[in-house]
Length: 385
Image 1 (cartoon, rainbow, N blue to C red):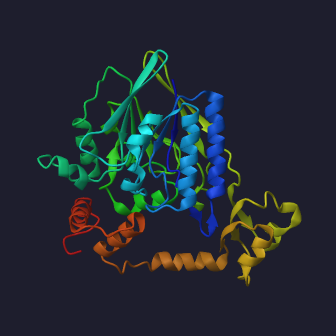
Image 2 (cartoon, helix red, strand yellow):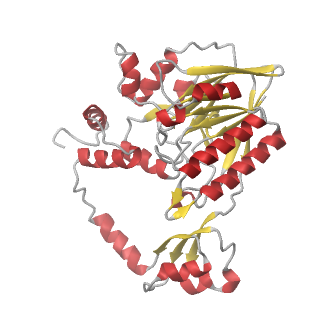
Image 3 (cartoon, rainbow, N blue to C red):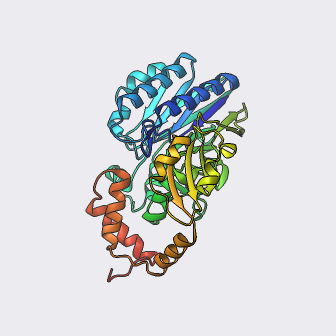
């Protein structure tokens, strides 16, 4: 049995002002070719299917097309919601999709949804855990002590019937660590990990009962704790912090003895996202220009700022995303900023601003109180803060 693990599609995303929908269609078509080549039996999609809770028409059409192509190939699909998704929107019509072997779990209902899959002599049970917060699980189990995301996931697993004799696969969308060691961060989720603190962190040991854990939320592909607990990463580079990385997808093979093996397969985008460094003259010299349609992050080493630099650069590299400078002036300014950095906002203001940026809504009093408690325990703030 072969399973393909995807996550963080972020359909409908823009890279600054550039609409990525054509790039996303290209990479999904490449994934479909991979599915055909490897005779994949099922696809696991680990959340953040859309880039925002109210996706545009083009993003909805693209997902519909991708799911239709999977169904036409008789490939079973197991999909959960992430923190960027609207639970209700992604869950709409899920009972109809099940007739086409497309299983969607976007709303936590007290236990983890699961479905069996059998291909030849191999079989597995697929568990679908959408992105959850402590308050959501506490609603179902008020008698349990649930203060953190790890508590929430642990309780959800404990209240789900799991047959340990089977090959059990979990799909989840959370921030998972290796005994306190954070994963390699990538894209916008990297910012989230650095700012929220410990409340979202979940130890990979919570998932010990599962033979494979298909994670979403972090954009860099990697294992966490053990090779069977893995982030697929996003299929495209969605941030300047990802320009030096590469994108892969895990292909999981399960044999008749429940043994799991994993192969990482490289994805090749329609247009790469690259970082180039040098003087304006060097970077725009005809002999140095390569793949001009790529998305470009340029760092200029010219000592003096150049007027209308973006317009000039986009004449050669039309998809230039960002331009900055690295010279004696910027290095001196950076040193001054570091030496004089002063946090002028309160802890509550910083957390509230960040929460709204990531989730699109205001943090509750209950959640901010929990954040204060965790920050105090970690020594980040003190009672006077």
